[in-house]
Length: 550
Ligand SMILES: [Zn+2]
Image (cartoon, rainbow, N blue to C red):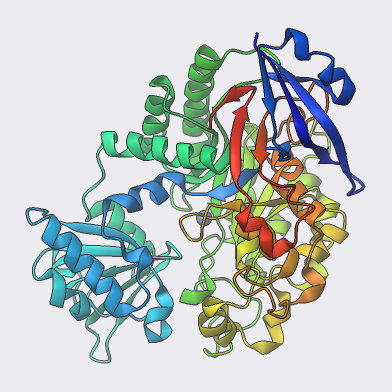
């Protein structure tokens, strides 16, 4: 067992349930766990294998990412660099440059582009044709619910004027009915799954390694992969077996509205395979060093506001009669949720529109009332995004013991909010968005995430935005919905204690004696600097169960 003593700085031991931080001056890790704090840790210096001088920096519980798509994020690096583009011309230039560098490529697959670069998010196949010629091309948009394809790709998919919209999807069209080149929801997913070429297993294993190494470099030790198909389990098992997993990942297998009745048994089998490998690789002892689990099932309750596919309780402001595109019938959702919970799965429900959040809460409430005899520790389920929330639903998270997972970087009035979101939902519902402060004050557990690659996986700018409700790049900006700001301690707790609750563990989320040593060494204490300075804090080291991952 390696004994490590860290001294010469601040130890942020944790955020207590009452919201106050506990601080110390030194910490000792013995093997996988925290062995001592303060003077007790200093006293171990002489027998330590390693003594680290923190240089005035801070050791804190390592943050986690409660909702992300790490493999999709890392795979973006293979295609054209459209994410860096600052306008439509920039996207086309990136695609042209990639094509010039890969003249033999049979397809161009890339992501992800900023959907605000074209009015209404309507991207035309002909714009891509100018730089791609006949090479079939598909680009994902930032929301990952939309794809922009060129004419050759439409041809490869057989999409014409007479192709109907798929169930739960939309093919945007020109006035003459011909396909425009923008595919939404199931139309985009079907295209990517069945028409575009799949990434190879080797590329996907590389992506797992690259993504988790980047998380470790950001000081993070746990990630919720929020959308896994059964075939994707293979790249995680392989990466773990090859020692290429640098952060803990919990997999959420996606429940399919069309085929869910056979999935609880299938997913339980996959979970068992993951569990077995994990025990073999990482052991079963307390102070768990396990890096892979598959404890969760993902439901897409609805889509996104930008596409008018988020489910609203009253119509979109710019489309009379349109309530969005809910993916589940009420009774099917209730039955499916019960079937997966019956197998011991945690539920992770994507809900953006206010009607989707209500539907998710209703389904979880029905679970409670239908099985009040459930014994043991009930599973804390998760509703992710909670982009819109009817004020009367706010208290239900605490009442039902449901975790609200927010992506705090979205809680600002940026271009997406101004140009795509508010025009769709209308100003009267602007104030229903990202009610992080209200949900926290109601007594619910909140956890934070990124939805990377939708937005940056770096927790630092997002932590800053949770505190200020504006971008750290504009320090003087007015806070957007200022009542929904949270304190630095509450925000950091959402990345640590809240994440531990979401991960269903009681021995992580703080650095008290006996807890697992998942820790980050920062150049400054994020609770003690100006919020807009948090993104400049450097990550100097990361430990996962006492093992250095960065
Ligand atoms: Zn997501």
